[in-house]
Amino acid sequence: MSTSATITQRRHALYGWMLLFPSLVLLSLFAFIPTGATVWASLFTRGTSRRPSEFAGLDTYAHLTSDPVFWKVVTNNLLYAGVSIPLSIGIALGMALWANARIPARGFVRTAYFTPTMLPMIAAANLWLFFYTPGIGVIDQITGLFGFGPVNWLGQPDTALWAVIAVTVWKEAGFFMIFYLAALQTIPPELREAATIEGASRWTYTRRVLLPLLMPTTLFVLINALINSVKLIDHLFILTKGGPNNASKLILYWIWEMAFAYFDRPHAAAMTVFVLAVLGIVAAVQFRLIDRRAHYR
Image 1 (cartoon, rainbow, N blue to C red):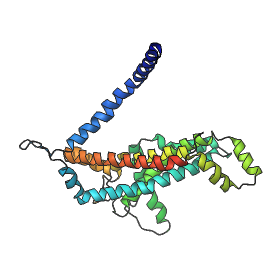
Image 2 (cartoon, one colour):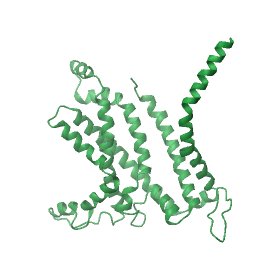
Image 3 (tube, rainbow, N blue to C red):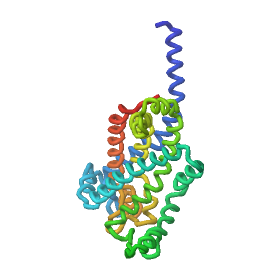
Image 4 (cartoon, one colour):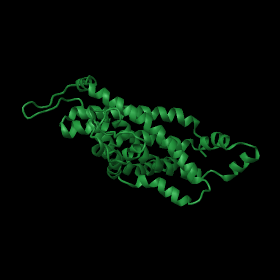
């Protein structure tokens, strides 16, 4: 290789590293270093003024998994994600298909669907208290017309988590609809005309054409919904605070409790590492399985 070619190659490499440098610095400061510090903190015992923190290896993880609350919280979060994610995505897709059709007041429909997304989660939770309040809430007022008695939706272990899931689906569906609506508007109308000429029904066109073309959007929405299922806890502070008897407690809320209510930093760090590992594995599996079926244009 000539000297000039070598110099040009080095200039290109230097140019690439200069472009990467700002992102590398920010990621290191706000992602890589905090992650490493969290893993390191999870390997020590809880320190007190009389007994300083000591290296404990994986004992914190063993103690964490032997706690019945751990399995209760994990089960709650699996149920929360397993119900809220498919419901949110399915409703978002349905709303996007309807809002993209030629219907009267289409702008109003789109705004109405997106309105819950613009509300802060705390405000949305306060709004839903008017629905769930026993005896005087909107739901009890409606069910009372049919002879049903009042129900303490947020105060019963059987209904508390489902009430929280309903709020999440209501909040998330409008947000995901925006992505589906944007993707639908990039699909050429000629495909619809060609399907009509071929005699394809609306369901066949949706299943054979629209859904495959929406797979990249679905993958993106699915990853975001999965992250949100672990990340969103604001409404728990207003609605249930994880109760009653841990019935609606989710992972991130439990981490917050351990770190800032009980000041148990090692267990909070160990739980955080557990969440990061699970999210990383699930995201990798999702990309590996679904990305093969995505049709990028």
